[in-house]
Image 1 (tube, rainbow, N blue to C red):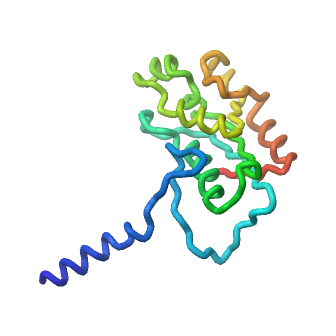
Image 2: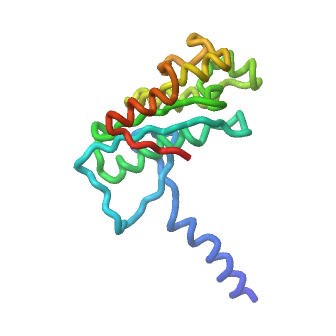
Image 3: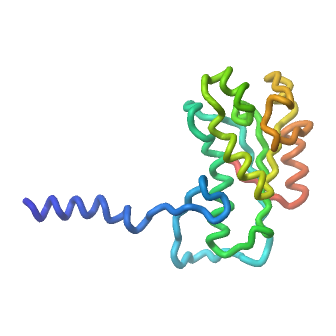
Length: 177
């Protein structure tokens, strides 16, 4: 019986030792990744990797970082870990819909949810590393979000559709979850 329990316990814990998360090299407080040893599909380290994240929703727990913003941090971190230079990583977030609430300044976020915006530091960290943070102007108008009520890193666009098309015209690849 003791051996069976030990065996069962080891089956539960073993994957935790093999697949442990690690902090990123670029965005250290967010975007934890896993190491993938010897992938069959090789990562191109020579060409630019341009990605635009289409972020149109938020999640129920307003006390946590929007996981879609965190995905952009993961994108940067995992590619840096794979040996791709930061200069070759071009990233943009196009924010619309309910995700617009996640780029409000703390006072506005607090008025809406009763807490400071948990996304503030992540957005600042992403922007510091060259990530464009773009808000749909149509969403902003519909939701009555003034520019002065959004984080300073946020750029307004005519629309999310406009920003997505223009970035894709510049060879950014769409990532939509």
